[in-house]
Amino acid sequence: MNIADELLNGSRLAMSRAITAVENEYDNAVDIMQQLYAHTGNAHVIGITGPPGSGKSTLTDKLAKAYRLQGKTVGIIAVDPTSPFSGGAILGDRIRMNDLTLDQGVFIRSMGTRGSLGGLSRKTAETVKIMDAAGMDVILVETVGVGQSEVDIIKTADTVIVVLVPGLGDDIQAIKAGILEIGDVFVINKADHDGVDRLNTELEMMLELNQQKVDWRPPIKRVIANRGEGINELVDSITEQIAHSRQSGQFVNRRTQRTKSELLAMLDEQIGRHVRKKLSDEGQIDQLVASVESRDKNPYAVVNDIMASVLR
Amino acid sequence: MEKHVRVLVAKPGLDGHDRGAKVVARALRDAGFEVIYTGLRQTPEQIAEAALQEDVNVVALSLLSGAHNHLFPRIVELIRSKGMTDVLMIGGGVIPDSDIPSLKASGIAEVFTPGTSTTTIIDYINANVK
Image (cartoon, rainbow over all chains, first blue to last red; front, side):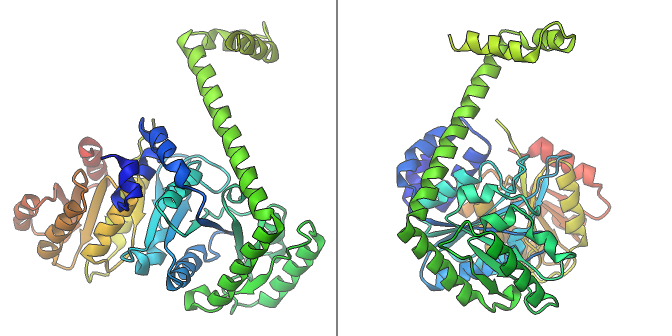
């Protein structure tokens, strides 16, 4: 199967296989991505982040349905944590999206973080591109929900939605730096629970203090996702945010930043790989490590020497 | 090049007993597999579609309601018809030994009945996954 061609012709199996190839770094992965790249850049990428238990999967399901009613096709990437001990994972987000399984306008892929610490798999960005090239209008990326430092999402999304719930212990907890700074739209889910007004007020206060995004003041939307309440208003806010982002030039800026950091990250990875391979081919690494550990050499000088010899 | 074995643990039909499936799912995770669990009351069509989207290597069907002779072969058929010919299909649950040969004939590679250790299942997958 020529995966890229078949994907561009609408094959969902090809899309699935492409994602696997990229995730597992098969030999044909780079080739596939090269063929697909020109077809990317059209999808609206929405990141959904927030603490565990905040209802991200349920919200993702409802958002997807709302976009489907608008006639849009929706790709969903649901990321769950990989166990650092066994390397395995339970990818259980799909369970909240059962209604969507048979909708041919929706494609849901579950991914484990496989060692990444920022809430997303390293291959999430590549998977976004694959779904984009396959023609998905909207791509929802649901992060792991580790807590407060899921900054990976900002590198991937045009719109970042931060989902919070009232009464998750100390409400101020949820409002530490990191999550607060990356939200374009804030959602208070389970808005029928106690503490919703307090959380709303605290959020507003923190957003007031955080006046970097002066021109776009992130709205706070109350939602009861499992009852489907507040979803339409949320979709409207997202639409407003994107319109504003395009008008102000933010949209293009963010995408340019994203492309730049991706390019540099790919470069770093290839260079690192190349140098490590050289070192291992030439059998030097154990020797170098021994000389550094014994303080015979210092690591700074060793690295300089390696660079000098590799860059000759 | 990393290879992670992806397993879909699925409960077809009207069967609400999910403890076994959850025990197996956790054991598979601890063995290093990525396990997608889609919950109760899945139709064969839903299972086949999920298998495609997730590009799984293994589909593990759990059924305690007695409908395995109808549902298991149907699911195999749907999965193959979607072009996924390399998927390892296994099953478990309340399945009489006398039903196993015909299940195997229809494409279920192995059936793990109550009392089987999870290690046996894990070893089988590792030995037979493509």
